[in-house]
Length: 290
Image (cartoon, rainbow, N blue to C red; front, side, top):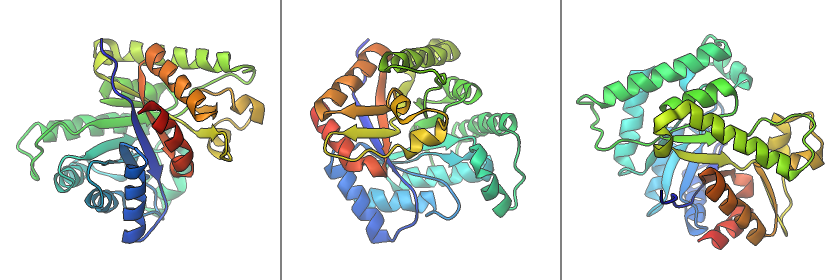
């Protein structure tokens, strides 16, 4: 089977003016990124109009969400917004959807919504996906002229299994490791187990899935690495242990490019995403891989 081409995404949150979002999109496109992604949290810019604004400022860049919180939406209303955004971006929209993290509880409360258990949130995510696809299979208005790619990101077993069963793109938002991780080889072994978990859960559809990995830190020589995100998910690990995680890449741009080639060749991971804090550092790696 011919391997997929690499794809690279960069995610932004926060608020911003129209000019600021357009500048971010143009910079990402100029640096070689394929996708720019918008977070979905209260207190931040609304993702759908922001995606349209960025698409209008660029020529080829795809725009997406990383990720919409399914619990904030009813399927029919969400289907309308997704179809409209895909229409107005001329088919450049990538539909990223998630169950909503535990730390989103204050946002549910601020929105006047009950905060379900983790299992209930994941069940609602799966049902939302099914309902939206059923709606799109009919004569939906606005019209849906293609299969809009669905990305589901997750870290825990239940959420990753749901992603493997339903999504076109499975993005691993971190790889679980033990507290005794002691080498990069141990981190790579944990990644291998995670990919095998996805393969088993996906069954026959695994070959059709685009597999992604969120790079939580990109420590390119000449740039100062920010380990805030991997530390948030792994609070009990030392800084040295954090650098063993497969989502924390470090070294020269050429060396990191070799690591990502290994992830592609060995594990079929081809879609790598970073936060906006790593925009320019990751661009040096992208240049090596183009």
